[in-house]
Image 1 (spheres, rainbow, N blue to C red):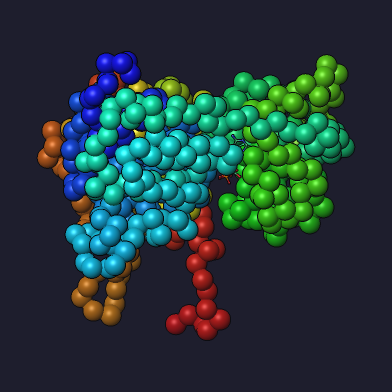
Image 2 (image 1 turned 180 degrees about the vertical axis):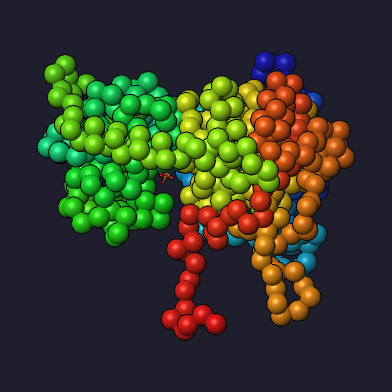
Length: 568
Ligand code: ADP
Ligand code: MG
């Protein structure tokens, strides 16, 4: 109590810890070092879970996905300059993906940094972070730690979520102040992400457009998954009778096997739809900016539900913008639709279902292949069954072909179970995401990784073994990037896109006491994954894929620039 604290002292270290705990933040992802080594130790002693990584970028990715999964800011803790910069990639990634995250970084002495006198790890971190995140703050006085953290939390989770930078100079931690005054200075953030209720007129306008449609389509994005309004979203989609597409990380919001799912008829519905309702999905490159060949010639009307007003008309005209949080918007729709809403035209739904079922049937035989060496479909066919049998497991996915093919083949059944490369299509999220997913959800994790993608965060297998996390990593090892067959004819160096042939990534796992398996057929793969998921032991399965099986850049080869000069 304040009475007992009379005359006692506290310091910056303890105020940071107390402020975090007061706001229910009990997990930190980071890498120790000057000036935050003791802070990490003290956090652990104070009952905060501190996950210590091998590289800050992976800790940062972990924090970012913790934010996505929990709607609380994921915290990454780094040392100054180089550690800060390593974490910054993940902070920018969180902002781009609309995940709430706070990068807390120690920094060097202001007086020396500002005069550029060459301090240990000197860098003006606040200035550098600012353009790459949603907000950035620095705390210079122990008495401001409470306010500083409160501002950071609000900035991260309110409105469109994103990354926030919090700069804590080394000297702050040692600053001493009266303990009672310190306790009083802390702020417990009330209603950090206030509901944003849509205007009734906007709701009516959107429903009127939807009602007028002959061939409507709903697109659910990861903002809808983030919102955790799962039941109402499902009710709304079912009541509307509209076919739906789920963006990569929205998969499982409704089961991919749902009668209204248009997942396997994507190109048909994008071309033929006359009204498209976007729920927490941006019309960025992942949706071909809402125009061009992908969207066909049929005129379209777009309805968009988003918390960020500036998102409207970003690429094409939005005839019915609905600004608000998705939970509030969808429940307002349900209410306004009332008891006698007539669902979307049945002939459209059956056209979509027919196309979808044809495409699914076309793919089915490829998924049954037990050929060795494996191709992507044979390996994914085995994994698809495992995910179906274990719908609670978290599925992490990165790579090129490994990503694009898995997205189409592996059906998801529950919300927020598929975590992947996101808006940037970045490589390197794999181990950070897997670790945070295991920590935050307590569920087993299956990470399916291209051999190249895995390389960006591979050292974290030690972290996985150290914390004994129930993570099964499957590496689709085709000896290289896109394919393992490229040859450099100019000199004796290997081609730029190939790795050591026949690498055994499974042995990396064994080096740290985890389970390593080399799998050469879908049957072997299936057995090994099931065993790992049952045992919960950290496992890495080197799945040997035919080096010739991939295609350049997976499904996005069209993004490679082409020269007007003829190729030699
Ligand atoms: P995807 O890549 O799955 O299409 P995007 O990241 O492009 O998804 O879009 C997510 C959108 O969701 C962003 O525009 C973001 O502003 C919005 N969003 C995030 N959280 C919420 C929320 N709680 N309510 C409403 N919109 C949200
Ligand atoms: Mg590869």
